[in-house]
Image: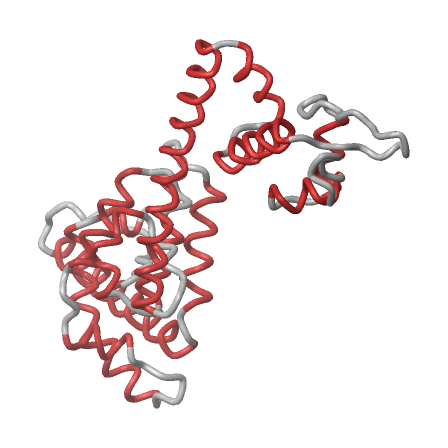
Length: 269
């Protein structure tokens, strides 16, 4: 290059750390003025062109849109307005990325995507398998009571029989399933008495929740349990029905009003 003749387009692009295509694009949209041409018709760029090109590249690297650069040049007021707006956007972006990093850190600890709703993040390390799926499905039902209910259930330590139910495999014998159902039924009954809404999802849907959402939740529950657990839950339902019928007959025989029969329970624990 002859310094007295200036730089060619390719040389200017190399000096600015960009491409020939980019320089030509800036010419087309009016951000970079065309230089004088020599007798041979070639462009001859000067230091002023390099400084302008470096400024454009710096603004682009900061996130300034090409369309906003002329306004930056127009006045200090416009420049401040644009840069402050860009700074606010960057602040929001940084906050979002920090949240993403925090979620990635949790996922790395669990070696799986952390999709739990925020209300369950603090207890996520204590949840596994089906109990990590419950709040995820429940989050699709926009009933505030459900989030509180699930958080209460999932933060309560699992009993030995509850852990035995969680570990039940499809190979469990008929006798083992029946024995587990008999021992687990009292716990299920206590949970239903303490939170009757566990057995009334249809009523919750009729009261304003979307029945399709509830159908999604209950379908997920039934599909994510293995056949042995489903069988134990059915046995528990049968046990609880028999106890309800027995209690109803006892009160009726004594001359007292009959107990109202509850809908079939549908335990999810």
